[in-house]
Image 1 (spheres, rainbow, N blue to C red):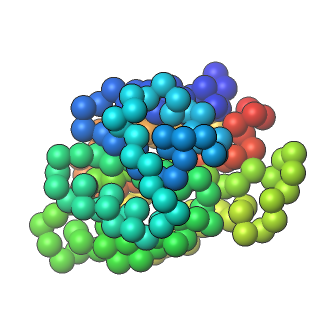
Image 2: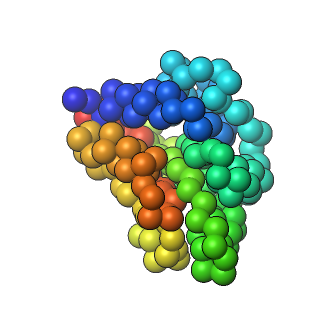
Length: 177
């Protein structure tokens, strides 16, 4: 079982669910390694967004609040996801603390690849620990091994505990494990 193959299998499984939508940059067009895991997802499940991370996450929050969708918000790297921190920490996470809403979203991100070319530090951040500390109603799961991938995405989709999930991939492992 290979890291990339498990990601692709997980995305295809999620893509078969009637209530899922994949939202983000390079979900419907080439541009990131994550796109390669979505090539066999039906086009109507892929909502391409411009580079506007805060708006993307706000849109995802709205879909999750409707209860009709389990949106999968795709941020190719943690460093990009940082621009959506307001929507994740102040809205998606906190709404359960002041209302009866329990929105469920799946947030997919990655620690940027350093090999074969190091893209510099603005692309390789790992903010898993700090997001775990900043949130109470979002679980952060770092996917260190291929055998963790499918069970983690399955848990994120099937969970009924009122939590959303951030799943953290490793860009280097797409080709290494």
